[in-house]
Length: 189
Image (tube, rainbow, N blue to C red; front, top):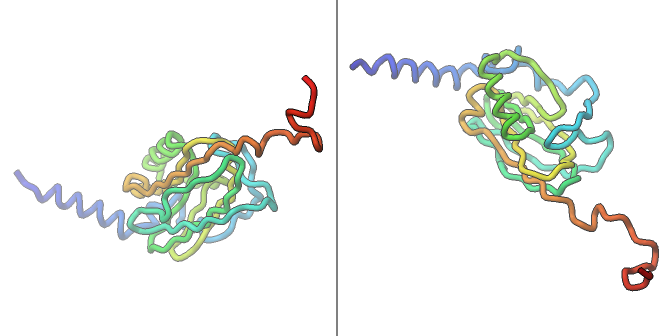
């Protein structure tokens, strides 16, 4: 049994993953280098909606590492809260962050394996070149467990995934305000 073809294939895959990041980018490798030119389209997704312009947002810094990890990789947010997710690529490879459900990210990752040069830009994703930062400003208006992932071929498969837990809004936060001075005991049934 000859082991050398397997070793050669493994070394070739390793070289592809570590030495040719631009070849694995979505397109020409230039996206992520410049800010979005078009206004953000606010389309409701299962995991929320792009924030309205000027809305207050809590800023969360997330590091992107060439070890195929996000730090932190777990976030909690209240339903209705808006986050400004600032992704800082501290590695040498191009990375991206895409928000979604586990099912939508799995499907997108499969598509990226088949079409690694596919170009796309949505409000729930950002491409970040080495040493640069990018951001997503997102309103999490639906409770549940959602993910963010780097879908560049090989990165997602290596575990570059994080989780966002959106907790239901506090009961009193969405309840209508009572009439001034009125309590349950003070009105007639």
